[in-house]
Each structure stands twice: as C-alpha cells, then as structure tokens.
Image 1 (cartoon, rainbow, N blue to C red):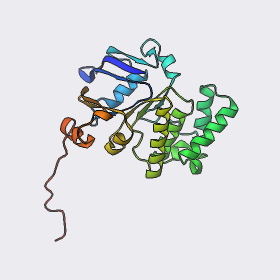
Image 2: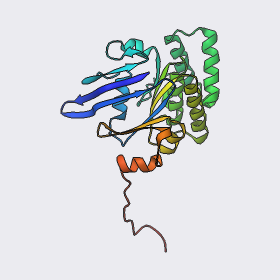
Image 3: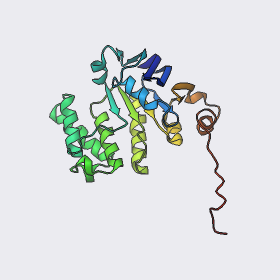
Image 4: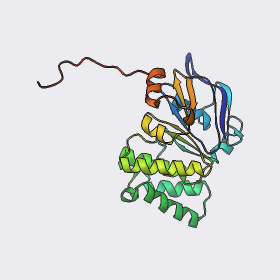
Length: 245
C-alpha cells in the first residue's frame, strides 16, 4: 500500500532524507520515529506528493507518487506538519470545504461531519475561526479533515502532540479501528508509549537514514530503550543547585 525505494531529498548540499527503502502493507499502522531534524516530516511530504524527491521512487495506493501525485492525493488523508488550516475559516467551515473538495453528497457530509466533531470533542469550537483556536483544537480539525473523505491511507505528522488525554484515546481508537477495516496509517511521533500501543510496525530514522525497522510482533526490547540506543540517548545534566534541603 505504501512503499519507497532509495527515497532521497537534498536541499543544496544538505541531505535531509538519504536512500530510504521501506514498505507498509494494507491495514498496517507504521510509526516513524526519530529525533527532531531526522527527516521524518520530509519523508511524509515526499510520500504525499508535496515534495519531489531528489532520487528514488515511491508508490502509494497503487499510484506512483511522482507520476500521479493527483491520483495519490485523491486517495489519502494528510495531517501535515503545519496543519494546513485557513485562519479565517471556522472548524465547521474547514470540514464543509473538505467535503466539497472530495465531492461528498450533502447527506454523507452532514453525517460524517457530526460524527467527527463528536468523536474529536470539537463541538465547543465548531463555530470558532481557526486563528482563534488552541493548537490542540487546530490539530483535531486537521485530523478531522484527513478522515472525512474515508481515505485508503492516512499520513499523520505528530498527531498526538498537544492534545488532551481523552482526545488522544479517541484518536488512538479511531486509528486502530480504521486500520482493522483496511486503512493504512503512516505516522510520525515522539510519544513512544502511544506509538508502541497502536503501531504494528516501526522504523527509526536518524540523520535521514533508517537505522532500524521492526514489526511490533518481533520486538525483543521495550521500544523506548531501542529508541535511546539507536536514535538519541537522554542526557543527565548535573543540576546540583536544584532543590531545597
């Protein structure tokens, strides 16, 4: 459902993504992990047709991303790094606009919008302009837009950052249920316990390269420990002055 081979992106002399090769089967949830600046968001942008790769190839939903980016975008939902919202549109208007773009009939759009607003706890903010919403509400709005057209694949850049625990649980349940019904999910995250809870496969990127891939069923150590070993180790500053004896 999602695959790439030798996917590379250079910006001048800087290589942001360096020869990534991976695949995600239909109905799987793949968690892409790594430090800030590792190349996760750049990878998502190439897989969704927002950035042209410098080298390599990618296929999503049976379509070559470089040759048929429109066909890919018609079949996927995306929660982008910048959320992609219009400051002067309300939450509800964003969803109505998304329904129009994807050609949903009025009855289907109304039903799905009400269900998404309820599931993501957006009712209090539905008439609020995006520019006046909290970051968490903006993120939930962008996720609702990604889910609304019932995509074959979802690409979610840090979906669990800056949201409350109840919404996080609702989102996890939605993604697991969607995957069980055949939706393929590719997400980036820094929240390792959540990633370990819902993902069926993992990859760790460091300095633009995949340094580790595994199916959830094949994990032999806690995900957090694997991340610390392969991506970045925690530092322990000696703040001896901190405290009140």
